[in-house]
Length: 255
Image (cartoon, rainbow, N blue to C red; front, side):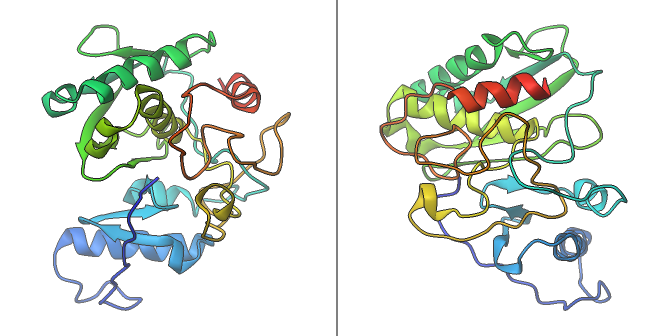
């Protein structure tokens, strides 16, 4: 859900030899793994020493290696092959002081947590600091009016959501929408219009359906529509922040 474009800069070629620092070498391996897994090169970008696909989904080295394991083939859309394991029952969202200083981001987080908990899933969310957490996600700020997160790895949700401080100028409902969306990535959801970003963004193509997986969740549509899901790639200023019927079906099926 990045609102700004970024350019993928790879200066070391296909080999890791001579790539310099360890973070650079790790990023090069991640990019290589993503391409091998089937992601289009123009859908991969490096922003501030982190690798992203689909503009808002951070991919760690461990997660990129999991994509190449046997059995991680993809089908259609919606969820990744990596999900949150049954050992995780309470996910605590821990906002930074910077995050808490933005009233609409803070309110949006409370509403996003309520969105998930209202469904009676096997996983619950709580605002930290609190006790009884079996997994934690840090809520941090970033510049701009979008957000970023990542996909589960090792049975745990992705550990960070970054929310743009520019969202303070949008409604609380839009903040609720964006935060619910980024938390959705953390527990394994792909963009509902991953195959054609222009549906919700007005431009853009296919994010790629291989590797991390783009698996159709039973009972959900195989095609996306404007306003049809919180997990659409881009948001509108008119978003209500509430789940659509297909979002609810998808969440109940997985969790």
